Amino acid sequence: MKILCVCHAGHVRSVTLAAILKADHGMDAISAGVWGNNHATIDMLCAWADRIYPVNTDECLTELPPQWTHKVTVFPIGPDSYGHPWHPELVQKIRRLLREDPAWLAPMAALPDEVESP
Image (cartoon, rainbow, N blue to C red):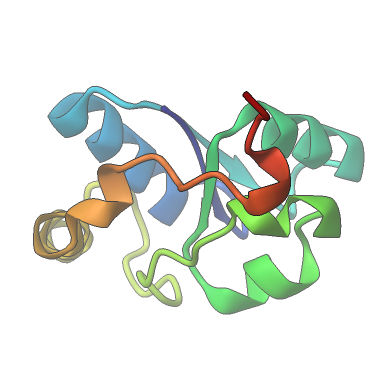
């Protein structure tokens, strides 16, 4: 499964989330910042991803292209109060959220218009 992890700058929360998804769960995950990339780049990354995890609601609602909202689930890390990737509290929070809800690691169900006819 291909996962795009999104935060404001793409330096702390999304980087840590993507790294944990790769290292601990073998996911194909990358991080991106909505402030440092143009709309064409964000659109291309959203097209690539099976799932999109913005780490805060404002990134989800205002910066991601609307045609990809069916792939979006907000990963509830919240605002950046950590300052750097691999901050112990950030790592602990991400690992706890993944452990408590295995749905984060499961493919999204196909939407009705994506189901192929027999």
